[in-house]
Amino acid sequence: MNVEPAIRPELDPDFVPAALWNRAYREKMVQSGKSMAVAVALIRPDETGSIYRTQILPPSDEYDPLTLRYMERLLKFLLWQRGACTVLIAGCRAVTEKLAFIYSPNGARAFDADFFGRRIFLQPLEIRPCSFDALPDLKEADVPVGRHFDGCRIGFDLGGSDRKCAAVNEGRVVFSEEVEWNPYFEKNPDYHIEGINDSLKRAAEHLPRVDAIGGSAAGVYVKNEVRVASLFRGVSDADFVSRVRPVFSDLKKRWNNVPFEVVNDGEVTALAGSMDLHENGVLGVAMGTSEAVGYVNPEGRVTAMLNELAFAPVDYRAAAPIDEWSGDSGCGVQYFSQQAVARLAQAANFEFAAEMPFPEQLIAVQKAMTKQDPRAAAIYRTMGTCLGYSIAHYADFYDIRMLMLMGRVMSGEGGALILKTARDVLDAEFPVLGKQIELCTPGEKQKRHGQAVAAASLPGLGGRR
Image (tube, rainbow, N blue to C red; front, side, top):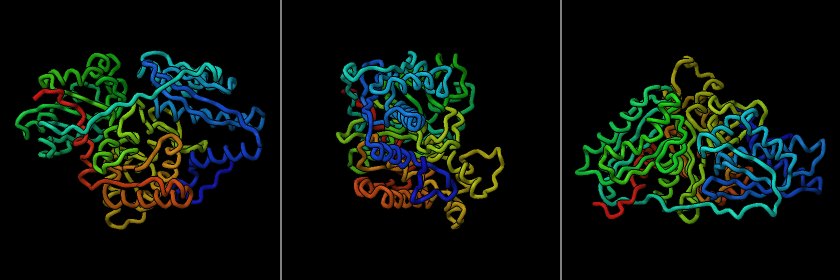
C-alpha cells in the first residue's frame, strides 16, 4: 500500500508509520464496502488477559497479503504489549493458521514463540482459531503499586550502561547517584549480583536503617523472579536459572528480608510520571539503552501487561532496521533508544569508530547539540518525527491522557527537540489526539534519577518499622 506521511523523518525518509499504514488498510475496507469482524483473545496462565477487536478485508487474492501483514503486525504488538501464552482468534481461520506457523519454532517469529513460551510463561505459545461464541470472558488484572514513602527506603534502576540508586528518608531524597557498568555481555553472574548489591550498600550509608528496597530493571519479572532480561544476556542458561532468576530473592535475604519489590523499568517510568504530575492514564517512555515503556491506567493502577514496546513494530516498511536480539524489523528499540541515536548518527555523517559504545556515541551527539551542530539536530528531529507517528499508533492500544518522556536520550536540548517535533506531527496528522494527549518531560534530575526514586516507593511496609 502507498503510505505518504505529511512529515518525513529527514534522516530516515523511507519510514512507514504503523498508524498511517493501518489507516490506509482501514480506508481500503471503506472503499470495498466490505469487512469481517475479528477478535484476538490473549490469555496468560493465571487466566487473566484481554480481547482486542478489529475488522479485516474479506478474503481475496488482492487483499490476502495485506490482511496477513495487518494481522501479523497486530499480533506482534499485542503480544509484546499484553503478554500471553494462549492466543485465540475468531473470525479468520485461514489467517490464524498462517499466524500459528509464523509464531512457531520453525517460523519467522521463532524468537517471539520462544520468548512467550519457554522463557516467560514456561509453556509453549499456542495460537489457534475459535468461534466468537467460544471466546473466554477475560479481565485484565490491575493492582495498586508504589506511592509509599514512609520509612527509610532504597530505590534502584538498572540500565544497560549505568546503575542508578537513591536513598529516601520519609519521602525526602537524601542520596542519588549513577554508577557506570557494562552488563550486557558479562558472563559471570557475580558481576551483576555484586554490582547491584554495591549500589544498595552505597545508598544505605546515607540512611539510619533500611526498611524497604524497590527496584526497576529492563526485562520481565514475575513475583520478583527474573524471567527474561537483556541485562543478563551474556550469562549462560545454567547460571541464569541457578543464579540470575532468583537474584532478587537472594538479595532480599542479604538485607534482612525487608520488603523488596522489583518490577519492569517501564512500569516505574509511568509510575514516576504519574506521581510527579499527579495524573493518571500515563504512558511512560524511557529512552535509554533500549525503549522502556510502562502504563498507569486511568484508575491509577498498573496492570499485568508487559508493555515491552521496544519489540513492538512501529515501522511497516519491508526493509526497516532489524533488532539484533529478536531478529525482527521496524521495532521501537531501533527508533527510541541509544541504538537509534547511533543508527541515525551514521546517516547524519558523524564519524565514530565501529567499536565506540552506544553510550559514548550518545554523549558525543549531545555535546554536538550544545554547539548547535545541525547534524545532531537532524538526529533528534528524526527521532521526534518517528515518535509522533508512533504515539498515534500507541493510542490505538492505550487510553493515554499524558505521555511522559524520560531517559538518557531525552536529556538536554536534544530531548526538547524530540518533544517539539513529536508534537508537530500529532498536530499536523492527528489533530484530535494532539488535543487529547499532553506530552511532557520531567526536569533533568528527574529524567536521570526519577525511576530510582519512584522504585523506592514500590514496597509497602506492611506494619514493619
